[in-house]
Amino acid sequence: MTKVLALLGAAVLLASGYFLTMRKDVTPVHSEGVDPVFVAAEGRVEALPGQEVQVGAEMTGRIETVLVREGDRVKKGQVIARLESKDIVARLNEAEAQRNLEKAKLEEVSAGARPEEIAQAAAAYRAASADLDLAQTNLARYRRLIAEGVVPTAAVDERQREYEVARNRLQEATERQALIEKGPRAETIEAQRMSVERAEVAKQYLERLLEKTVVAAPISGTIIRKNLHDGEVVYTENPLPLVVIANTERTRINAEVDETDSGRIHVGDLVEIRSDAYPGKIFNGEIEEIAHYVGGRQVVPNDPSRNMGVKVVQVKITLPSGSPLKLGMTAEVRIRPKGD
Image 1 (cartoon, one colour):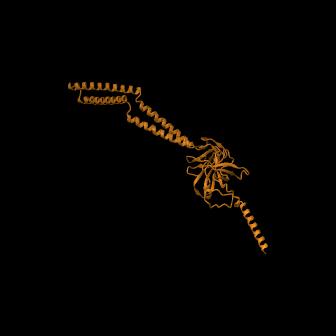
Image 2 (cartoon, rainbow, N blue to C red):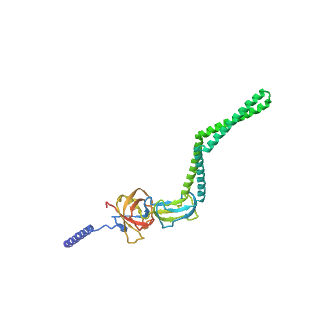
Image 3 (tube, rainbow, N blue to C red):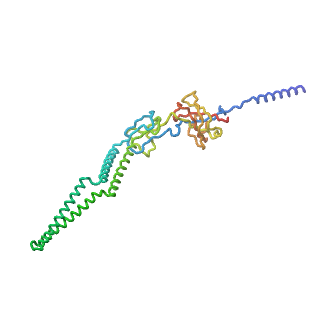
């Protein structure tokens, strides 16, 4: 009996030692195949800030022609569409003609009287002066004849009226000659100058309006969407742009990291990027920006088991230049935190 108990005790000790030894060699298994070294997330390819632009028109009008198609490469400043402008061109021509007319009037007013006008005024003055001398002489002669009783008093009255008319004409001629020699008044010149300025402002307004009928590319890039076509009307208040231009050479990933993992990642962490469009290929990236707020998911995860209700942090990840990933394409990312 004693031997049996001793054998049982030894067997228990051996089993205990075996299980203790086996426990030390056990490696923890993580559920769902998640590698704790990485932080997994989903993201979408987007253009860099300022590298995707919705292009509309600065004025409401009917489109005369759209000069680009989807997929076309355009350069900054290149004309991509024109609006109908016949009415504006006609109004501009009229405004330019009016401006030229007002300028000509200003030059005429500023120059003063022409030499011919000055000569005419001088001649008129001399003629009026001579007429007055003659009228004065006739009046004096008739007064002597009345005194001698040769002519009636009524004849002297007629000569008196002729004298008054001649004197008034000389006064008018004198004032006209003085006015012509003095030149135009400052008020007249200033009033005409204001007329020229008003005509110039009207012309410049129509020139700016005509410029707005030309739609140019604000950046260099690719036409990724074309929403309107020839003959359609574009409205300044319409949110639908005429075209969308993006620089597809400069893109990044906007990834959504679960808020529970946000404390593990840092700017500068290396990232592996995979896309179903390029199976077996891995693109390398790096975290360049981490948002300071959390929000709801915008990208639907490929893994249906992931909770759509989990709050996420937006993380911007650089892509190598010339990456084949297209704008709007979804991608899976694996971030290797520096501290792990």
